Amino acid sequence: MASTTDAAPGDEVTRPAADLPAAPGRWAWLVPAAAVAWSAYVWVTRIANAWSDEGLGVADQVATTALSLSFLVLAVGVALAALHLRSGRAPNAVDRWSMWLLAGWSIAVWAVRVPQILAADHSVPFKAVHAVLGLVSIGLALALLRVAGRWVAAHRSSADDAAADPGLLGGRC
Image (cartoon, rainbow, N blue to C red; front, side, top):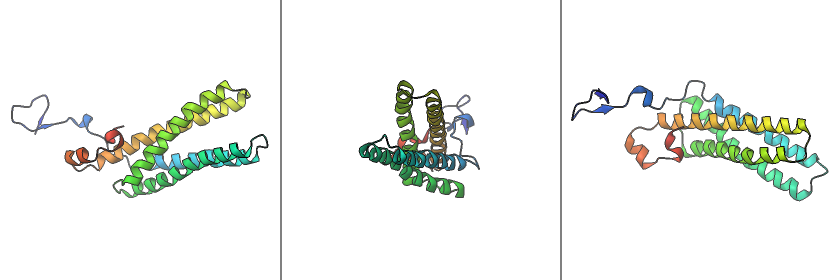
C-alpha cells in the first residue's frame, strides 16, 4: 500500500496513521464513570436543595426534579456504557445515545444556566460555585463526546458500516 504522497495511479491509498481515529485508551471508561458520578452528585443535590427550599413553590420543585431526573436517567445509560467500554465491548445504540445525549444536554443546560445565575441577584460565592459546577460539567461533557467518538470509530468494521450507520457526529470527536 502506498501513502497519499507517493501513490501511483492504480495504487491503493492509505491514510496516514495520524488521520486515523485513535481507539479509546485502557482507562477511557473512567471518563463516562466520572460523568456519571458528577451528574449524580450535582442533580441529586439539586433535588434535595429544591425540596428543602421553602422559597420555591411546588411547581418549581417539580420542574427542578424533572430536569434533575432527566440527567439521572441518562447517567444510568452512561454507567452501562462505562461498563461496556471497560470490558472492551463494542458500543450499542443505547451506549452511543446515552453518552451523546448526556453530554449534549449538559452543555445545553449549563450554557443557559450559568449566564442566568451570573446575571441574577445572587451572592458572589453562589455565583462562583455554580460557575464551577457548570464548567466542570461542560468539561466532562466534552471529554465524554471524545471518548464516545473514539469508541464508536474504533469498532467500525468498514467504511460500508460507517456509511450505513453514521451515527451522531459520525464517530468523530
